[in-house]
Every structure is written in C-alpha cells, then in structure tokens.
Length: 241
Image (cartoon, rainbow, N blue to C red; front, top):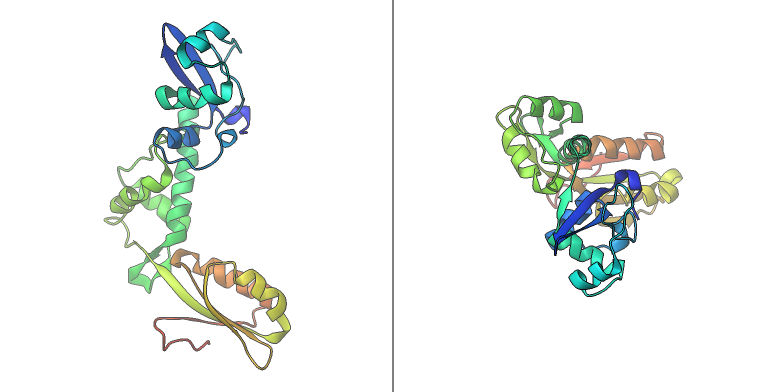
C-alpha cells in the first residue's frame, strides 16, 4: 500500500450517496484507462471505503449492498476508481506537477542528445532551462511518458535535441574483469560479450545516448580508469580504444 500522505481521494456519487477511497493518483488514473498491470494494493492507501475519507466516516453496509452488491472493500474500490473521479487539492496538484516535471526532465536527459555536438548528452539543467522558455506545462493528471513527445516538440525550436541510443564496446582488464563486468553488463542491453585469452572481458552494450557520461563514470569507477571504450557505429567498428 502507498503512504497515506501520498494518497488522494477517488469519489463516486451514486443513489444519493457518496463513496470515497484513498488512492495513488497515477496508479488510479492508469486503472481508469485500463493500463494498470500491478496489484490493487499498489494503488490504495487503505483497504476501506468511506463516506467521507477526511473524517474517516464510513457508509452504511446497506448502501454498499444497494450500489455495489457487496460490502467487500476490495471489490468496491476498483468500481469507485473506474466510475468515480480522482479528487486532488490545489496543493496536491502543485506537488504532483513538480514531481512530474522533475521526472520529465530526467527522462528526456536520459534519452536525448545534441545532434549538433556529436550526439553529446544534454545535462538536465540545460533541458530544464530550455523548457522554461517554451509554453509547455506538465499535466499532473497525465503519465509522464505520454507527455514526452509534446515536450520534445516544444524544445526543438529552443535547443537541438533528439532521442538516440548508443552502442559502446568496453574492454575491462583482467585485474578488474570479475567484479566490474557484473556491474557494467547491467547498465544497458548486452549485445555481446567475450572473455579474452589474457583474462580481460569485452562487452558491447546499447543504452539511451543521454546516459553516456553515467556509463563512463561507472566503468572508470570499477576499473580505476583502466578500461578502454569505443562507440560502435556498425558491425565492423567493434575494436576498443
């Protein structure tokens, strides 16, 4: 279950009665759209149905039976979410907007590059500054992933930007290969790997281009800067540097 201080109210009014449940706003909205694949406990803050959640008042069992045909909260809660409305206060809306704004900036920074600077990553602060120059405003009631394309369209007149993946070959010396390769291989999609006769490890990974600096930092941290890397542009370009 989610913490109570992170929950908002989903409210359904029916048969002259009001029914409220405490939910995670993003998960509840995903349920309404039929896009949620988790468990109900990941959506709710309490296994309970209220007449007034802020006061803790509960509806009569007879009202629950009349409207839902059951008194079981776990059967009623999905109906309240599906048929009702997600209620958020101005303060909650502001908090959700700020949270999703940060998530959007991080998502774009992880995937975007500057095509005019040899596909170098854009730092998050540059993306945030550029976004402030546009008319784009994050919608707190829409998933971040559904707003990325619109944000990119707003950013393109301000900064050169596009989403890109990069494939990098890395050779880890034998002294570090055992432990380092276990961490490095998890960074992206491991396209291929090979153990060399000298005990070194070679791996080829693909991941969002915006994470290149993070990747190099990880490699250097676990190899004391002794690993060799090279961006792979095609199948014939697999030598490391």
